[in-house]
Image 1: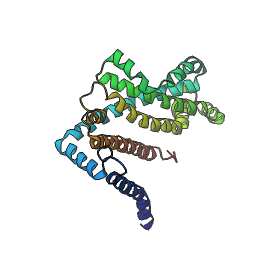
Image 2: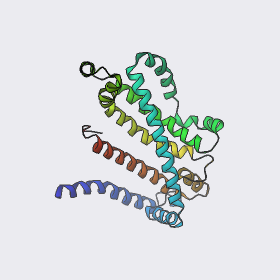
Image 3: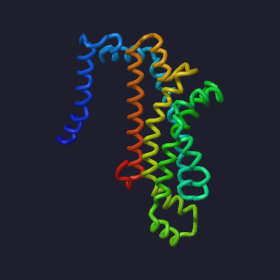
Image 4: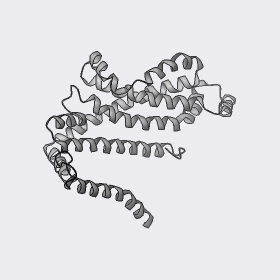
Length: 253
């Protein structure tokens, strides 16, 4: 019990110190309080947004886009990663091109996506999926291509079924790398949801930040930024907990 209390204290203490320093700097003469509102004012802005029901709508819309985009990007990233990692001809054909695309800044493709797909949901989901795909693909590729040879030899001895080898050996051996790729993809998805909602949106956390900027409501902008950080951290936490619960053989995720 004492150890758990100490752990909680160490978790909460940096947050409290940060809030106290933020309050002190904001209310001092060091900065303009309009441009750098204190946490008390940001909290009041949060209450205002929540009481009106506006905040819940923005959160619901953004989280739906993030989850769908993350799922699509991750599924395709895993499939392509495993294939290029294990099938040499596909690796030679696809990997050079995918590495070129991987170098594209995901934010830079937004104007092109809007030109091609418009400003609807399809464009937003594509932008997120595109950005998530590459970290998941490269990690899955590395995991699949670095499986120790004796595992594959043992699998070949025990079964002739290629499907069983994929699901019983290749996928489990690659899974720690896949998890790492998805965790990177989660962070990128929350960056892309902000960018994709700046143009042509009428709801979402990115839209909230953009509109608050136009109205010069710095407090609401900070609320939006903290929401992105909070839900990004919570999504990553839930994902890691689920992985450890479903796949306990993965010691560190």
